[in-house]
Length: 125
Image (cartoon, rainbow, N blue to C red; front, side):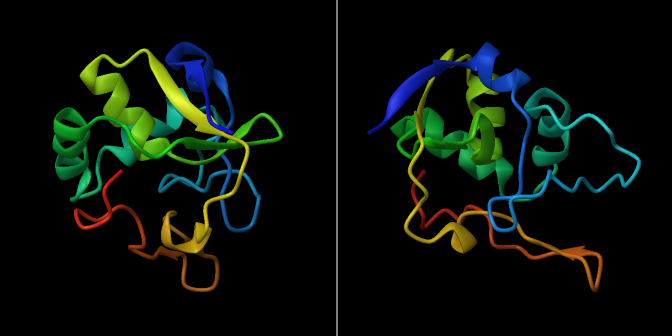
């Protein structure tokens, strides 16, 4: 069942990888702060991020942020966009998305690269 949380509270939560449950793996391997507030600048670098912001500006935030054990498992791009747009209360859920692999950017430890599985304009968030 979705519920809302203040943006300020979400910014203080740790960000986790939705697939492996490990802490977020930033592009900067020396990053030690895993709070959402520290991760968001990295999220804003993705080439499709401006389209996400525009989609949320037009249609609102329609997919809840996935919270598991008090940590953010999916939704960091949406949190970044909400912050940019001045949205102060965000929908959240403790229920995993139907297909978490399609809703998260996945880090491949073998190749040390990210897959581009994040938000796409055809997937309305």
